[in-house]
Structures are given as C-alpha cells and as structure tokens.
Amino acid sequence: MPLVIGNIAPVQLRSDSAHHPGRILAPYKRNNFKTWLIHSDDDGVTWTGDRELVNVTVTDPGVSYEDARPHCDRGMDYFGFHIDSVDELNWRDLGRFAAQLCYHRTGIFHRSNWRSKLTGAWQFVGTGPSKSLQLRSGRVVVPGYHGYVRGLEDDGVLPTSQLYSSVALGHTLITDDGGDTWRMSDHWGVGHGFNENEMVELHDGSVVANGRSLSTGTPQYRVQARSFDGGETFSPSVFTKIPSPFNGAYGSTVSDGNRTVYHASPDPLPARSWLQAAFDQIGCDVQGTGRTRLSVWKSTTSGNDYAEKVLLDSGASAQNSFQLIGKKLVLLYEQSDPDPMFTVDAIVTRQALGHLQVQLPHRFVFREVNI
View (tube, one colour):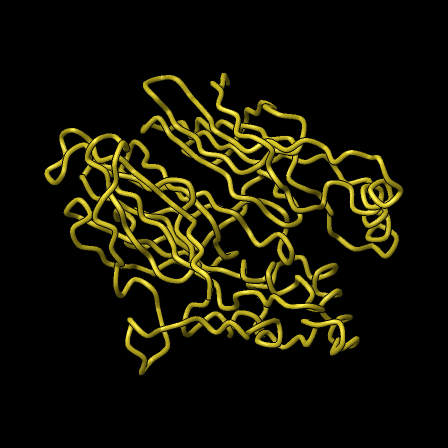
C-alpha cells in the first residue's frame, strides 16, 4: 500500500502552558488508519519528533497494534448491499439502496441494519481537519472520526463505498501533558453520526464539535455535538440548519471563547442538473448539490442557532481553515475555476451533473472575514 499522509490537525500550545509552551503539535493520519505526531518548537520553521501514537485506533482483536491493517476489500456488502461493481451489480439491492436514499430521510443511523454494523475494528480513520484545540485547562483535544468501510478502488468499481466510508462516528484524542502521552475516548453518542469536525470551547468550559454529516443517506445538514467534561464524552449529534452538499464537505469552526461561534462551509444553491430533474421526477428527497458558495455563519447563542450569514465565494470553494487572531477572523480556503466548456462532452457533463463533481482546487485563497 502506498503511503498517503493527510488529515492534519495542528495546534500551538499557549505561552503559559505547563508543558512545552509555544510548541506546535501536528497530529496526522497515515493511510487514514494510524495516527502520527510531529512537532515544531520554532513556530513551524523546522519539524522533528515524528512518531506513531499507539493504541488510539480500534483494531482487530488478536492482532498486535503494530501489525494491524484495515480491511481494504470491505465494501458495501458489509452493509448488506451488493452494489460495488458493475459486473456483479445486484439490481434488487440497487433498488433497495436507492429507495433508502430517496424515501427514508430520517437517516441510516436510525435503521437497525446499518446501526448494528457500527462496531468492531475501525477501517477508515481521520483526525480533524484542520485543527485541534487547547482548552483553558491546558488539555489538548484532537477531533477524530472513524468509519467501518474504506472504499474499494479498481476498474469497474462504483464509487459508492468510497462515499460510505463516511458512515462514521466521532472520537477524541486527548493529552494532558503537552503531547508527551495520549489516550483515546470514543464515548460519543451516535445521534446522526459524525465525520470530519472541529471543536471550540465556550464561556462555560463546554466544548462544541461541528462536523460533516453523511449527507448521502441522511438529511443534508451539518451536525453538532457537545461535551461538558473536557472532551471525554460527547452528546449524540444533532442537525444544525447549516446545509451540506450531496457528497458532504469539511468546514472550519472558531469561537471567541465566550458565546460566539463562527463556521465556514459551502452553502450551495438548489441543483438544476438533469440528475436533479430525475430525482424530482420520482419524488426523491435528495439535492444533488456540489461544493460551491463558501459562506460563513455566525452564532451568538453558543452554537444553538446561526442567525447571521455572509457569502464569501460564489464559485467552487469548500475545504477551509478558520482562525481568530485577536479580534480578526481570517480564512484559508481552496478555490476552483469552472471547467472550460470547449467540448460537447464537457457541456453534457455540466448539464447532467451540475456542480456535483470532484473539486480539484486551482489555488488557495487567504482573506479576512467580516461578519
């Protein structure tokens, strides 16, 4: 398996920290399975100490942590749907799956055949992105999530299982000594699941996690959960009124440490593609939206509602990292240009799918946000 590095979630320890003041801790994932940590003591100029954090991923029993590997051949059949490949496509299962997508919008986390599978060894594991959080107590909490399929890749394989690696639950990595030792807590209520997420601390010491939802099998809104014990446990996730595109997207969240919470993620307009017309024709309660119209929401009620919103980018824009520097909000995000419409194939694809395509960023944009 080639080495893939991602899902970095850095945090800089405060200057008054009891352990390693000013150090930047950067936990990250290798192949979306094992967690590694590297750090910098000179504001990110140089990095050192790259090491694996052991026993923070749930692995198969009877296998040493060092030898543990994900089940790379596990696809949608794990959930009872034989719909992974074109040549072995089970049309009855495809119909069942489509009906579940379209007409059972309470979400798969409330269906026993799915929920019973959310157990055992983790298969697709992530941290963040894009940052961790140091609490006022000095503790560092790293937001994490884990799914039970990885997503198959091969000729003739449909992308369904890659989307459904996002059938995920939350967990937290915790250190109380500046990153010297770590432990994992997965005492999160299920609710509507939890995927890529960030955490903020509020005036009363509670922690709010704002996360990506599955979207392709649940209502298309972001989710939130709360902790009242320093990230040890989290409540079951609930839906916010912040929309999510069909294939989801990660967003970034910051707080002033009091009751104000800011969140950035896409706010797509209703889809107008041929695919959406087909959904509408059969009464399918799905919006085939893509990662467009990056916006910022503001809550002054500790994240209970987000009454204010400002549009930042009307085009293809999504993955981002939010920071609050003093009283200044700054955002780094990915921006993509529209595909050129020079060929019939390109025009037909745009009409058929709209913005429901893989976003390939052309640049990073760094800007101040006023809201």
